[in-house]
Image (tube, rainbow, N blue to C red; front, side):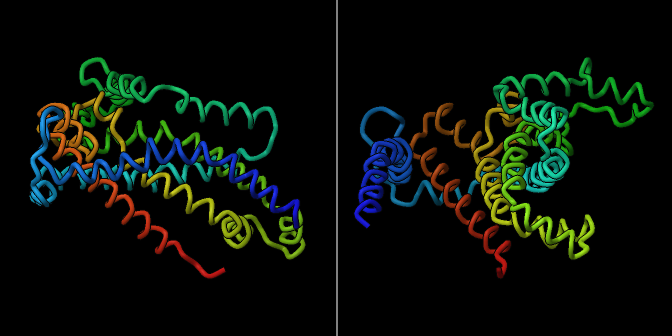
Length: 290
């Protein structure tokens, strides 16, 4: 008992520096930002108290709702793109052979690249004149499919979703592989003895065993999609005519381009609230009885 108490005390003391740093640079700025959302402040001079005026203006701005709609497209692309692809690849590549390790490294490689670099690469790929996407479509006889991918309001949000999916499959692949490798071998052996074939083993053994991991990955997808910024900002800047505006680019443009720091703080607070609501809704939807 004394040893357990000493161990808990040691762990608490060891965690204090990390908790202080996290509180100072993450938790406090969140509340500080929410506080400044009640003021009109241009980054310098005194702040003028406005009450809920900034938050009401955000809720009434049609650009905010367009940005939220675009973020929902990114969330859907991430949840229904990154998660299934990463899970399927993990089921194929979870063994520890040389070929599997090589392919896993190749899939993870985009994550090593800077998101700005990824945005630049895909921006050139989508270029209407010399981009590789239109070039390939022309070569395979699909000239009618070629278009200005980042300028066409009908497809530009779907176009910018593709590099986001491609860029972040790797981390989720590694998470799923780690979860699959932690399934006790006795459970797999018992499933084989009971005559569980591949698809039955997948749906009745494997997926239930990694269900909590899937829930965590979806939370990461939602939170990551709501703060998506770099790639879209590099490829389109939120344009043309704000058709690819996201919540993060909307906040950035209002904060640093027109120097409305109070209004930008209100937007960032709204992003946090929306993120929490979506995460809670997703977890409630995925809740199941053990």
